[in-house]
Amino acid sequence: MERIYDAIVVGARCAGSPTAMLLARQGHRVLLVDRAHFPSDTISTHVIQPNGIAALSRWGLLERLKATGCPPIDTYAFDFGPVTIAGSPGTPASPVAYCARRTILDKLLIDAAAEAGAEIREGFSVEDVTIENGRVTGIVGHAADGERIAERARVVIGADGRNSLVARSVHAEEYNTKPPLLAAYYSYWSGLPMRGRFEIYIRPQRGFGAAETHDGLTMVIGGWPIAEYERNKEDFETHFLRMIETAPAFAARLRSARRETKFRGATLPNFFRKPYGPGWALVGDAAYHKDSITAQGITDAFREAERCAHALHEVLDGARDFDEAMAAYQRARDEEVRPMYDFTCQLATLQPPPAEMQQLIGAIAGKQAAMDAFVQMNAGTISPASFFAPHNIGALLAA
Image 1 (cartoon, rainbow, N blue to C red):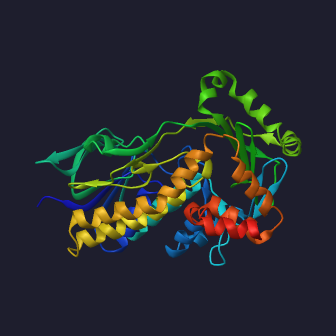
Image 2 (cartoon, rainbow, N blue to C red):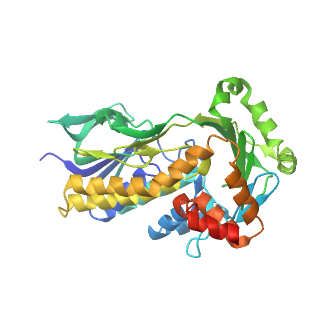
């Protein structure tokens, strides 16, 4: 008898492994494939915002992350030069963030998928999706030993990143697109303790930040507008360190630290994709992607993994029509993420804050409840739509 999976998930990182895990926990037969072998690294901001930490807690994985020794972050500090806005990023139920190395986080997630019953194939490169009568029916790829293998499934889920092969194969529609806005680079430093703080520095045409991660290291990340990318890329290290000097106190701390790795960097597009069609679905960066300046990618992936897995569970169990369930998945995603998408794209231009924002920053500086709200908006705990609502801004200014 031909073997047919309920779902094949292509890509086993922050969107794919949780999607596979959640579907497997609900009793579905799941195959999870990735061309990488884990643990392995990938370019990432590393930050898991408090809403993402809440997801790990729901999945029973938070204690595993804590056991890896990743330092918690209980304060975000936005240094604008004249003033600094510092506050708590989370809620009483989920008060902290973590800045986790992907070598550790992704391994934790794929192991959880395996424990849930998903079949895991590392070192498996997908070459194509199979389509019959306009419907995706499976994948074709090759294992690490070169053996060519075809597998079939009721649905193929592309969790294979912004350059998704699945999305390309099905010609997934893109909308709300914006070109890359920012060129960002990061590296790891020792001897740069942050004491539970994620420090972010906003300067004219520049933005950078630092947060502690695993193994006693601190990730320092920053960049400049995309218009400067070509001019600066030949000697980006010099430009990076010159950028740091715009915050003299932090620059002095960095000079006392030691850079342990090369710089890594990327320019990132901004888009939504239609996340479903006959026999296929998209999740994570394959379905929706934006600049890294607000560090929302991992948290977005966790939230959408839950949403996608719930919709597909209803379909696979026969409780709901595929198009109906997946259209609801798309609508809910777009409604929830659009305010942060727009805020992120505006922030990524690194243009000076408009006069209204400067007035607001000045008004809330030193007022802890208002600063907490500003920080929580940047962390995604509060939607920018709610934070910037006229009645809320009026209350903050009046306070």
